[in-house]
Image (cartoon, rainbow, N blue to C red; front, top):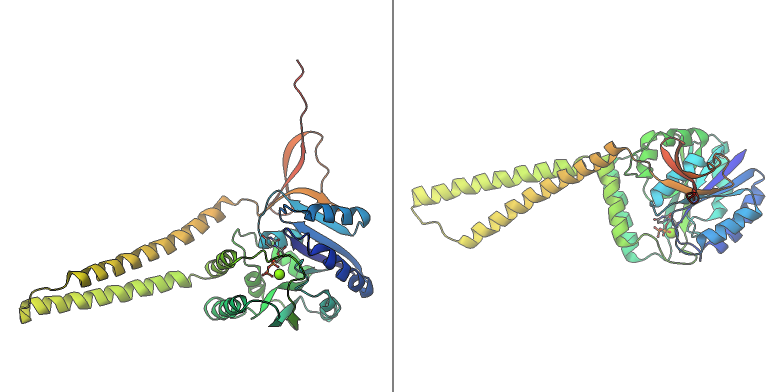
Length: 341
Ligand code: UDP
Ligand code: MG
C-alpha cells in the first residue's frame, strides 16, 4: 500500500524543519510505502529552498509549486489531484495535526473506512477569539447548512482512493472541502485528538481570511442567507404597511397632524438599509455564479519536483497544458532566444 501525505505550505520556513523531523520516524514506522507531496502555495520565504533540498535528497518527497498564492483549499485540491496513494492524508505544515495519529488513521482505513476524520476535542494555545469563532462557525454550519458536517473536524483527514477520485470530481471555484466531504456521505470514522499549538511561525489565517472562508462555506452550500433576507424584507414590508395604516388612522380618524420627521428618517434608513443588504446578498451570489461560469482552473502549477504525472516542459516558449481535470500547468517558461538579425 502507498500512503500519500498532502501538505499545503505557505511561508512555512520556520515550521518545516520540525515537521520533517517529526514525520520521518512515524512514516518509517508504518511499514508501508509513502510519498510526501508538498504543495507550495506561492511562498515568498525560504520554503521552496527547504522543500527542493528535501526533494533532491529523497524522491519520495514531491513538490508542486504554485505560480502565486491560490489559498489553502486550492492547495489541498492540487494535492488530491496529484497524490498517487491508495490512501491520502491531508495535514497542515505546522504540526497542529500531529503525525502520531497517522498509524491509527491508517488502521481505520484498513478496516474499510473511506474517510477518517481527526476531531479536535481540545485546542491548546489557540486564542479565545479563535476558539469562540470556531465554535460559532461549526454550530452555525451544522444547523443552517448541512447537518452531516462534523463539528470540530478540520482538513486533517485520511481519504481512500475512492474518496479522492470522488473529490476530484468537484471543480467549483469557491471551495469548502469539509462540506464536499459531508456531501459525499462516505463511510467515515472519527478520531478525537488534542490540537497542539503551532510549532513555529504565525497563522496564515488572519481574522479576515477566516471570515471570508466562513462566508464561502455558507454561500457555497446554502441559499439560506437569501431566504433570510427575503424573510427580513417581507417582515419589514409588513411593519411598514401596518405603520402606514396606523398613520392613515391617526390622520383621518383622530385628526392629529403627522408628527416627527425623525421617525420618518429612521424608517427610511431602515428600509433602504434592508433593501441594499438584500441586493448586495443577491449580488454576491451572482458574482459567485459568474466566477463559476468562467470555469477557470483552480490553480496554476509552475514547477514540479519528483511528481510522476508531470510532463516534461516543451523545448521552448510557454505552453499551458491542461492536466488532471482542469488544473492548469504552465510548463517550460523558457526564453525563446534572441531574434536573428
Ligand atoms: N496555507 C496555505 N495557503 C494559505 C494559507 C495557509 O497553503 O493561503 C497552509 C499553511 O501553510 C498551513 C495550513 O494551510 O500548512 C493551515 O494554515 P494555518 O496553520 O496558518 O491555519 P490555522 O491552523 O491557524 O487555522
Ligand atoms: Mg495551523
